[in-house]
Amino acid sequence: MNNKKGFTLIELLAVIVILGILMIIAIPEVTEYISSSRKNAYITIASRYIDGVRNKVNAAEIPVYDKETTYYIPGSCVSMEKGGKSPYGDWEEYYVVVTYDGTGYDYY
Image 1 (cartoon, rainbow, N blue to C red):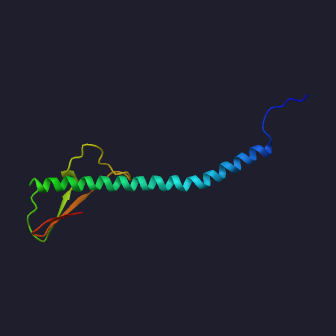
Image 2 (image 1 turned 135 degrees about the horizontal axis):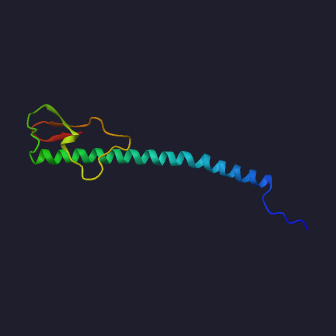
């Protein structure tokens, strides 16, 4: 008896084709998931900087009183306990913009 163990060429090609099809389907999904996660992390970190400036303005640590004036508060004025780094690389220069119209503040 001839007792050979192994896979035939056809079986190996079938597996390679199936894996190729799965990768064609999976790679765009994974890429979109990673991109979406980075965007959400970026938005979360930017919101934390805005909240930090809002807290400092409300505590009068940063004086913002002039009406119709745009204030550019550097991000270095706000300390981050955890993280604070952008998922797209280091923050070079970043500001939180604050305007006061006499009744309330706008932050962006």
